[in-house]
Figure 1 (cartoon, rainbow, N blue to C red):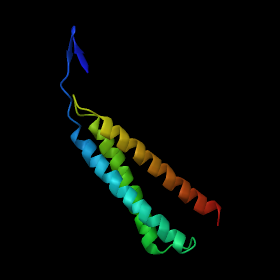
Figure 2 (tube, rainbow, N blue to C red; figure 1 turned 90 degrees about the vertical axis):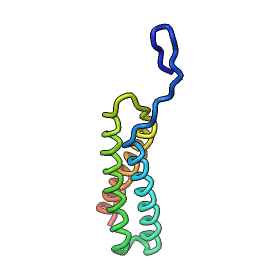
Figure 3 (cartoon, helix red, strand yellow; figure 1 turned 135 degrees about the vertical axis):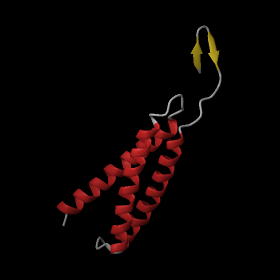
Length: 108
């Protein structure tokens, strides 16, 4: 609710347009990540090229989701809740893949 003077405005703000793009990109990123992990697990850590490609696509789409999530905050008078959720999920995804990459280097 937005307060205007001593009145309350009950008009809901629309969601930012770029937040829909960010949400779609993080959904695709999670699909790529969920597909890459079982491929690597089935081959007992000796992942095929397909798993590496899916992991890279997951990282790239998560980074794009972060960019679009940030761009959505530049839209005026919009609701940013979807952009915030997308940014949190994209950040968690990026940290997860960073940990996977670092762990793969040190646990060989």
